[in-house]
Length: 250
Image (cartoon, rainbow, N blue to C red; front, top):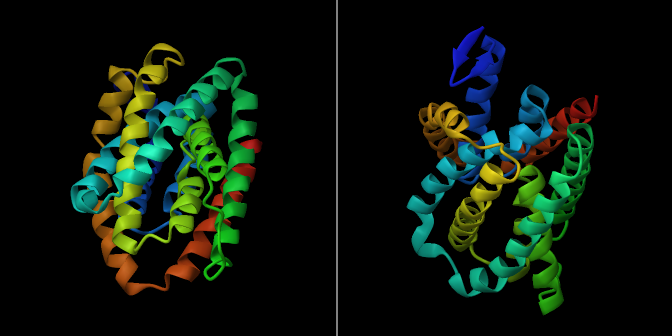
């Protein structure tokens, strides 16, 4: 066992953390879906609620990479419409998470994962079909996005559904998502510190050590997206995420 920032970590834990950091880095540079598998892996290793705080800081470091590369492409008109509803969702998720134990927390996360997988599969089949863009749709997506990102850092598919509806080109899609998640993840930090107590200097220090792995994942993501069939790779990630989510339940 290795003692790092008050955490007793086995070599398996360390390798898992490095793998998670790389997966998150890849997700932020266009390899969609890789961040999904990080959620159940972290929950299995650290518990449902505590894992959200550790993963949050990893995501924030990765968000910085995404914003740095795509900040000019963000559509702030849509961000301003979406963010207020997302903040409401974060508050709702904070309350729910405060009143359930870790077993129920993992079950809620698993349900969100399977629902997210369903959304992602649905998206694969909706390339040429219209998606609603009314105000109720914006409000629903915003609240769901805020709730799912607070409870399990799982708002990626929900946000992708909104961006799909807006028909954004690739760079605008990535840039808008990068700014959205950086803003919303920073907003979540005080609740993780003072309400859930899942973020501390120790957790921050541990995840800061993973910045090189996040950067490596980002570089690998850029390379992979040019070399592989993204559809097949996404299906592989979806399958592995489903397996990990089932494992998390037990």
